[in-house]
Image (tube, rainbow over all chains, first blue to last red; front, side, top):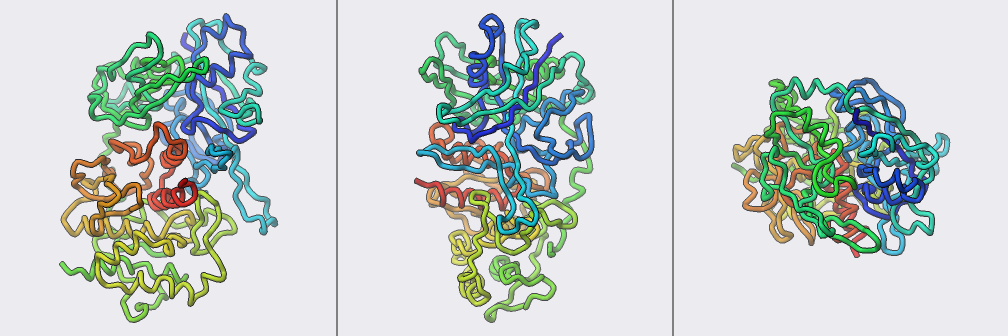
Length: 310
Length: 246
């Protein structure tokens, strides 16, 4: 039995900090003050992805379908492997086309003493047109925990409530409230899309650590079941903060896809959820295995129209 | 191949700047032909890069004008003093009447007047400026016999402007659509045109931003990984550098 506990926090105040995600390290640090030491030492946390609370529709590969109000503001049921990743990609492909999805899915920025601060809500609508109320979209942080001692989970709602992330916390930035949490057993999920597939891609959902300055952390090469060599991959530097010390990490930047060369996609998928490589305890090395859709009619929309007018 | 076709591309959506529907818009502006059909389907393909297929729907309540909304400031650049019919015509006059291909491409890359307009009133965060530059880049590639599936987004140095193919230029870097990356960082656009900005940007072999050390570049990059529409994304890079460049 391998369980993860999904956690969905609502940002109640603007956030100053890592703009790509709340790192798993930051989540573990925030939990440190609320969880007994003997439980905390077993915990591992994913990076927390920023998600707008908006209307949305489930992408095709998900076990559920249909349009839901405020899909991003809670945790939908998880039945299949793909369901785990609904809100783990910054592009949030579930957002509705009938709304200004790019405006709703990008962070409003308020500079605060030189720091770009991510706004905790997006307000749209014209102030002069108060006939209809302005529309507010709140931002959420989607993360999950697992533990090497199964007894450590689930954490109670009391310890997940009121956590604070990011910088300038003394000034109230980065306060959250717990919106939703649920436990998912990875062994119970439907992996049939992977069982039925022939060829696969691996999505680097969070950065994969190649080299770390952290004491006695092992340097890693990319896993053998990626086709790509390190030379072909875009890298980015990351940092881990520990006891006021900054340790630099050299990573394969997230968002990239690599070809999968292995022959056990389900096993690779399961280990990718729990993350692979150095500092996976802190959210690095989350991977998603995706079957390559061999649809032959992929070009059906590409017939050339003379022009587009309106 | 005549240069007239490439000049016509920059004039193909003139009606969007004076708010007339394509069907009723005058065929000339200040004596030059405008609103002509773009060959090879380049206009339709560029539209598909920024807007959903099917019938357009209004996506922002209370906002159905040709003035663009900014992702950064959330406001339109509409200024009743500046954007009178005569004011608009004066401001865009040169952009539409210039007839040297190289000059007109440069003028569009540098224009901020045309950034004030969206490519569709229904999708007010899209940008007429970058839609037009995308149409030009696609057409120039199609005319050279390149298929969409062979095209790449290429990151160039700031001073590297390739006629009709450069779609974005700033003091920091330039972006180009081409089949040959010439050793620069690049990523394929994909097999067919769709709102694929974030996925193409994510696959670039190197990003032109300092995403390891510069907090503002990281925030810009974080937003660029969230945007689907191409013209919206290109415009938001321009807007971001205008607002937050220190």
